[in-house]
Length: 76
Length: 354
Image (spheres, rainbow over the protein chains, first blue to last red):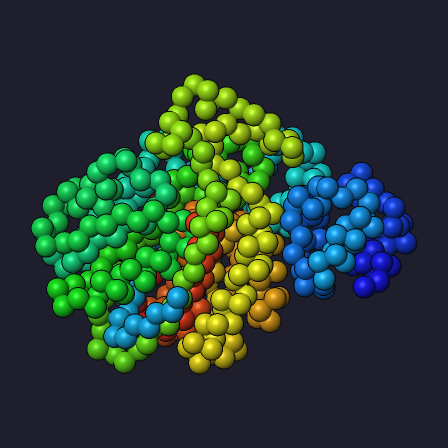
């Protein structure tokens, strides 16, 4: 599982965010475009791309994209 | 759990909607969310306008109005009703059963089985399964299935999770025996460990409504609710639907030996446009075959969404011809259920307003 690929997939869940503006240590919940709908899209993306179930709680506990990436990786 | 039924059919569907329409924009100001974010939510979820019952309009009132319409127009005769099923989460009273109130209102015959069933989003499928099972009896030839909910008043005005999508409505479906050699395939599953994922904490015997349960509290996302209000763990519901519904439908294809491309329409419960599109994509079904326009036009009235979807999108097509349908409901309970059946040559398939 590749971190950069995860960041790209993550960026795709936003309407208008360029993946290059996101990094492993981005505090994604601080992004202006972040909302509960993007959270659901991220949950769906992780289910589709990685066949891993994450819950809203997992998203709430993660601060950076890398933290979420690690949660997914642990469950694969 | 799988079911097979033979020589049973749906012969008519009538949806009864409240006249009162509320637009998303009118309620936006109640949410602790910027107008720009609200508009984004509207677009993704497909929120536009929803139908809301007037204060004092109960589930039974919509059912009575619909039945009276059917009697007046010669679409149903009182003496043919052998069973009256009322599927709802908003009964008029704790006791008596609402189906008995309706039975009494019309003076129906005593040889009639009245039954209330507490079920929500899968209420149409569960109701049909119950109706089909009853029709196995020689003494039951016609079942009137009523799905009705007026839950909008239980949802906080300041809850952007649930308020924009909730709707009130009722549907009456006539289910009867038939000669034609048609087979209905159905399945249903339950997971009670998720029973509280969708709930109304106060108002039952566990936690009676008091002044304390009416106090509004803010949650982490900025929504305000009291214990008397409906509360939904949206992400849990979303995960549940994405996890359980696609395998259930795949199983139904196998069980019924029907290819996904041979199904004319996928009439699914209508939580919001976003979830339905995700489901269609995951099942490899064209989004055009799975209508997702009920929340934006009328709102989600739990078990009433599937009949509403059928009446609104198919209308006269189901009176004039026959169509292969895949029905599915999923939600509170947790309950998920699906049905593969041919429907057609209905006596009526329409929407009226009350």
